Amino acid sequence: MNQNEVVQMLRRGGTLNMRDRKEKLFVKIQLNKQETKFVCWQRFVAKTKGYWINWNEYLSLKEVLQIREQIIKNNLSL
Image (cartoon, rainbow, N blue to C red):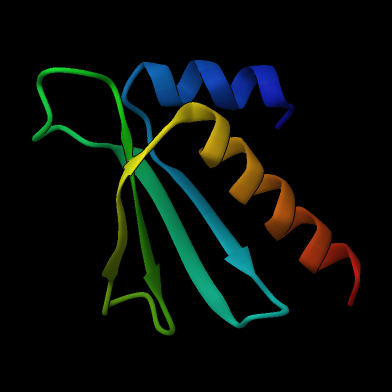
């Protein structure tokens, strides 16, 4: 999935699910539906898929794309 497809999916309210193999984490980024004044995203992280922890409540699109790029680099470095 290229960057344009990721941006479109996130703006439409989709969820971005990723696996960071270097850090051994599952990462889920989704639209923060509780915030009504501006658009932001939430990041959830889990060691196992059933136990999600909210790491970030208010992420900009730029920060989301940076997190995605970092996970891609971590997975390629293995």
